[in-house]
Length: 429
Image (cartoon, rainbow, N blue to C red; front, side, top):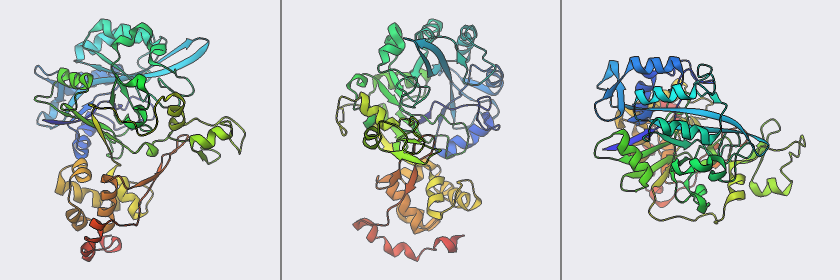
């Protein structure tokens, strides 16, 4: 069975999250994206944990759950949550985010009990805890050896393992003697596997990708994910697939183009300054407009720690595929500012109705059929994403990257010019 898994999302009890981010909406939209496994997120929050107990039922012997009111749903849930540890290391304040995976609600409840000693779990779905990263791992692993801790979005400037402003230069500095329990890292939107492969110190770690979604909309949930090939989907099988890094079981990760992420390049949003690592270093990381320190981007931070050149590829590891949200592809082609407009949804829904899910449209749908249901321009844009011919102007300092589609055609595309008998954008609308 092929499993498309987004293991890091949030509930309506996390800050800056949709008030409708509940089990029903997640179960409705995740399969539209093409996901058949999602993390619950936020299991530490008392109200959300109560809802999980009331609205989910365990699939016997799997450690995974289904919506109680819709047990025939194709979607499984895994019990997951994100926490922030806040502590001082060598005189500097560290704020590190961690993803926790747990084999069932009973074990998750025991974790909640232990972590409640370090902070108020009811304040936020992603609570801030007054403990070190090593103490977190110790508490979680003492609850059950089947639990998993994954450093979250490891390159984000704030709140991450390698973050430029509050992170570390090595995993061992962060997790100390508990590093032995860490076997996977979450890349985050602004980095991808090739960027992480530049650090030989990370070779022994599996690289996972998740959306960290605060919304159920398909341009957020599942924008990054993990793809497994399993005999039977169970919690233990998924953990084993990640830990083993076996490309026969852990097939690939779905990645946004790293330039699409909000912190890929160095810059200042207020001053509209965006710089490559080389440009930022040449001016000492000082904003040329306001003369304050720039927000150091992920690309520059990777450069600082890398001991390999760009392009290095290890052997025998899961692959990756760069994708962009389908609604944002349509939005960009139409020249509108919001992916939720009815004009966008009309085209989006026609493609989903035909091909079953967004992933299937992006990865497998034939050009001619996409064009027939939408138009040539949208079909061509999807092909550009699939074939990695799209350009993305890098995001910086909280600003998402901008998608730019090429008007150049390769030989295959020229042969498809006959499709232009299909209606134009204006005809469609």
